[in-house]
Amino acid sequence: MCGIAGIMYKKTTGQDTGKALVDMLDGCRHRGPDSTGFALYEKAYKDQLRLRFFIGEGADAGSAVARIRSELTRQGAELLEDEVIGNNYRVIVHFTGNLQHFSYAMEHNAKVISIGTSLEIVKDVGSAHDVDDRYHVSKFAGTHGLGHVRLATESDVKPEASHPFWATGFSDVAIVHNGQITNYWKMRRRLEQRDFQFTTDNDSELIAVYLADKLAQGVALKQALKTSIDDMDGTFSFLVSTSDEIGYAKDHLAAKPMIMYETDELVAIASEEVSLNRLFPGQALNTMEPPPGTYDTWSR
Image 1 (cartoon, one colour):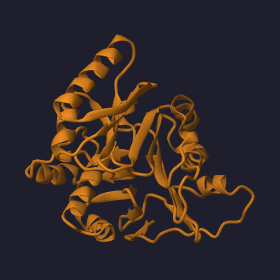
Image 2 (spheres, rainbow, N blue to C red; image 1 turned 90 degrees about the horizontal axis):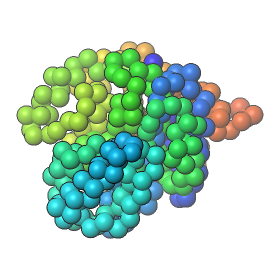
Image 3 (cartoon, rainbow, N blue to C red; image 1 turned 90 degrees about the vertical axis):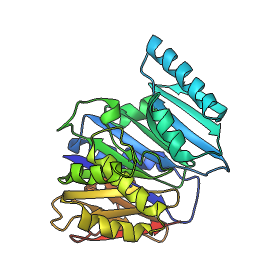
């Protein structure tokens, strides 16, 4: 059992996206006490990429940072900003080369959390407030984002097993997912035959790469979500975000819960209504539960 959350401010920028997601995930912390993660989006700048890496602690962290810097130089990326925060190394680089080749090269030299023009993923073990205390997520101001709380069922409790997952090799596509894709290996092998690479055995990463591949082929996100429901077997509810869109999909059985609230200003989606109530305490919200086998998107 896991909990998912997402929010998009439709018209304004610089909103308290981080705080909103921390509050939403705190509301459903009973669904996943092991780890918490956030996919956060803000303004993109031309030819700049934001990268986050897991580097560990102590001497291992120093070695990892040196190795990452060396590989960035080798790949032709100009380092503009960098900082170590928690067990993360965060960098901003100027880069104009092939993003997919660059992503795979960096992944072979370090544990990449995310790469994007506007996306940064922050995730670690512990509750939403634990992760917020380490990485100051609640101070993040942006446009939209996703969140996830995880109960470990099929893998260890460790930061790299936490959600969200980014679409390895593609910029700015992230996924949070509650459920299981039962034809995971069949779909993964098809993508690997086309030279796509995976960094985990997590089915959420598969969803991200599947959707990013569709987008790269010129398929609209809403249509990609529609085909995902038919192509993927299992029980699932998931949220996806790109640099300017957010969307959801539910399988035909709808065994995994999802509730949403929409106004002219925002759309918020979560596994349980208690998460939405954290955004508007004391208010009676006109929420709705998406029907089985449905999908939708919103854009800025």
